[in-house]
Length: 337
Image (cartoon, rainbow, N blue to C red; front, top):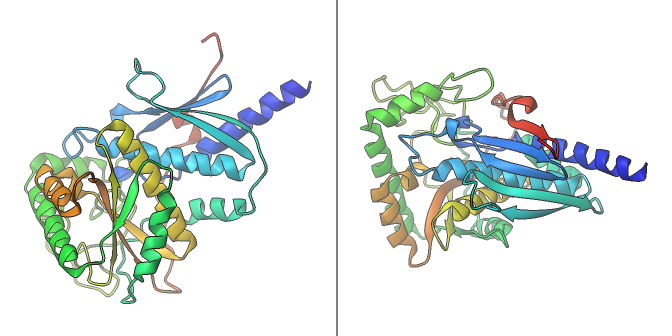
């Protein structure tokens, strides 16, 4: 009887973990993950049907998106009183099986409510940040959120390196702006359905923003909308804090770790009242990715760039981006199936 109750409790916890993980950010809000409960384990699979073949042919952003979902699930497990044990890329025969999680009962941490609140509050707010800069000390503290996650977060405070990085971002956006396949791909994910995709036609990568921009890589045929105080005029503003998620290697496992690191930094920033906006273009384009590698130095493979800033106090909340129903992303299999 006790064993049956324990199995049922574990099953409820695994379902709840997936439910929380649905809130994770993903490139173009594609939500490219599938979860399976197999006996006592929860498995995370990449959903290749949701791949961006033009902008992300290698699957870097797809796997990174799955990494953010993995980290969200682990945050939920600990907050619910379960200690997760994770095996990454556990089956070399199944290239889309990214992680297998098993859980055992543990003490509920004191920050459990805060952790779940950060997951719920986290969003991509692309409205212009305030003019107050993020202190270097805060950026360095955010970088420590990725300890033991297999990725590192590198702050870019030096003005000279910032300027070079801004130029690389502009160059990447220019190259993608001229790529019809990339532009059409994002158009296809704009208004994709009621449960996924981009809402605002002017959204960009990792798109949960709902505000209009003066220029994006996919609205080049449209006239620039009027400049308003809450509109981001440039990809990077002078007072933005800049962080680059890097890994020592470059491959599927590194991309998965980078996604976990992205989630960790984002949730920590949310808890501290800061706003994070990912900029993936500079890594998506080979020319600018290699130039960024040179800028960072040996042994640092860039995976994604993050803008960090403060949003105005009292500014209205953004509508939440849609998420696929739990039944669409979770399968339950018996031992014999």
